[in-house]
Image (cartoon, rainbow, N blue to C red; front, side):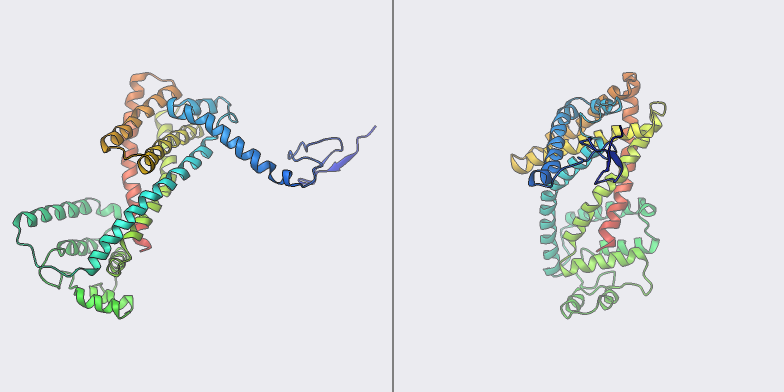
Amino acid sequence: METKQINCQNCENPIDEGFKFCPNCGQKTNEELTIGVLFYNTISNYFSFDARFLKSFIPLMIRPGYLAKRFLAGKRLLYLHPAQMYLFVSVIFFFLFSFVVADWKKEANAINKKIVESEVVEKTTDSAQVAFDSIQKAKVLESLKKNQALIGMSDEDLKKTDSIIKSQSGNNLKTSWDFDKKKVDSLIDAGAEDKVIYREMGMSENPGFFEKRIFKGFLNVMKGSGAGSIIQRSVDAVPIAMFILLPLFAFLLKLFYYKRGRYSHHLVFSFYFFSFLFTLFGLLLAIDLFIFEIPAWISWLIVLSTFFYFYFALLNFYQRNWFFTFIKSSVITFVFMMMVIPTTGILLVLFGLMNT
């Protein structure tokens, strides 16, 4: 006797009439649309996510390397998926971080306003203060020179940056950029075109990319709208930096443990480790914002303790000798930090200046 077949309403594959669920896509074969049906999947998926997150949270925080090891052992529905957990905790972290950024922007805009409203003051006669300012400026310029190739500054751009830094204290409205503040202020008040103001500020006839960004950013500061927006764009670069750095971190693990599984195995470890970092820093932010202010020395101790978490995570996940694991964890941390600084710096420059 032949079994009567029908087509699944979802995937349209033929199935036996008596089946309650389609063996191809899993949808119920005969289900009327009611309010309960409409919200069932959403509610069930939410509580499933919630339960798996709660099951994953404690092992993530107190058992380094455990979740990654269990995931590779095939326990992939009991705990939250590594990429899903990373996305979830990173969203929470950056939500909390936005409160801190708002304070930074407020302070930056207040300083920006003072700069715009201030007049050029007489040159200080305090020799100690002059010496201190000179030392600070020398440090800034030295840092720029060291990283000149990294951030793509030409010698001409560096020379102009040098001149504007050195012009910060003087008794003349004219700076070494041939910059007349009163005239620029009057052009801004008159609604002059930016290119006219740039010419007055000393921009060259054929400016390079970096020179354009410097002048545009400085003009925005002169208009009173630059500082806060630069901070916001710089902070916006952080998630993108992490998106780049996490796969690089997994690649480092692959290099140091090249016989211990595929790249995807190391990526699982990286997702859970970065999830731990975002969770820990998110908790610190939440306590600091809504409960009490954490002393700086305690925060630093907690941040430094993440190295030991990383060490024990490697020890538990890769099951190698404790001494060599300590050496590898130290080297990986050092190399990764050397990757973090230029990557983050480049993105901060791009986001902070490109759209000013």
